[in-house]
Length: 390
Image (cartoon, rainbow, N blue to C red; front, side, top):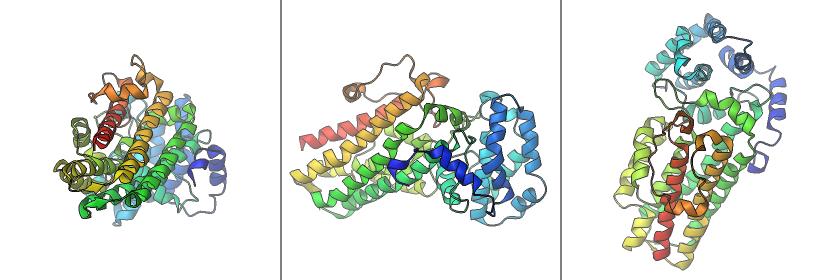
């Protein structure tokens, strides 16, 4: 799937996928989450099913052979796939917010904790489960991803998750190429930076496609990826790891980045946590593009500086600004009472607190939606100004 087709005809495409899944061998639990549960959630939303009835349904699904297979399993990869199913079921109870846990059947809570204790898996939905594991599993399920939405919006929700999975390799490659330059080179050329600029162009194409996601679809599934009643954060684009690696390769961590990173660490994919910690320490010690250029330990001519500023950093800023605009369009209630920030305003916005003042301001990552995005633009624009002074 390329960026141009993301969200185009997504709901109809998913209906065809579901229709063609009849001959697939799908585990009973996954079969319920993929096929029947989205309809059950719609019935709950429309008052045709109570949360107590949903809990009874989940209790019935988790008995007998399904329960035995979970308890008897010793394979980590199977456990990961199962945990995605279980966490999607848990997410179905989040719309009542503070009362959510009062409806969750004990059998569901018990097997989630069992999987957590035996395999070290998360007991709340996170980025790795909903994006990485969910999309990896889809290869076995006719391309179907688990979603909370039924056929009306299920395809758009599926593309919402798939788009993150398709976009990240581009910025991940960019980040590791930059890290390699910082670690091993004393000079950097425009030709060294050109592939990184191409990576950022491709990344922006995928992330820019989210403007095609309908507001109706997003508002339909957003309540299921809201923060949990116990304060745990849910899966969020705020925890896409390679975006953080890219920023740490470019410049040292500013105060707002550190404020964000420390509580966010448990919510990043497991593979990325030691990487982010190592890159943070290296970047803070001056092993990043900005500090090395200023110290003269990394040399760059005008052509290299130009592609770094315009081809890489400007595209990174463009991604952040686009994300801010898309979020404002999708979740207008989170921006009520806040001045609309123009591109020029962001340069003087500075670093603002990430703690939301109201529930409406809170994104699925638990942060003030406007400030987490505006802060990131500010940091990158400070870096760009440093480049202009070289």
